[in-house]
Picture 1 (cartoon, one colour):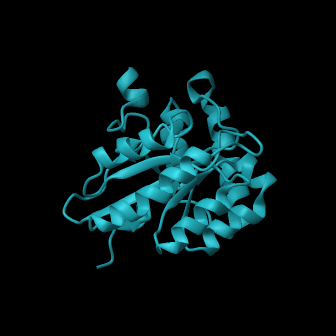
Picture 2 (cartoon, rainbow, N blue to C red):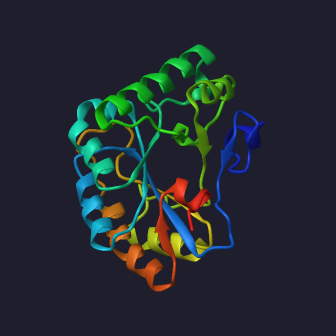
Picture 3 (cartoon, rainbow, N blue to C red):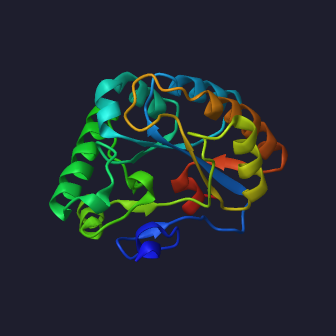
Length: 218
């Protein structure tokens, strides 16, 4: 049961991916729990290198910071659904999960002008009822190849962890927010991104959104 709920390769509770094709030298950076007041710092770093990324946003944070949520899309990045209130879905009913995911979908679409097609469950925890929610809302679940633990690890450890596990088609999970915390300290994430993006580019990786990674156009 634990693997079904949290296993990165599990699709028990709905269609899900954790890795893109390994035939191309491309990586998808993803950021959870935003937007936050410091998300623009991440956007500036990505812009310096023309790197694409996917931001899995919480509806409650989007309601609080709609202009920053909109700036993510305007910068050319992809936005995914990361729930509305960042709950542990295994503690809730299918009806609650439906309501929470749908509310985030509506809030994100209203703020950014685009409804997400990707979904990442809070804490990576999937549960009963989620498959139907994904089907009704047209969402593909996304886990990760490597997670940086940037909400608790120092920047150097985040960098080493991601760099060690990087590979063709990898989906990297970082965080531009800290759940629903206002003005969170994301300094470790910013410093890790500052080092990782040029490092990965120097190694020949393209920095793509998850959708680009999964369905390349060239």
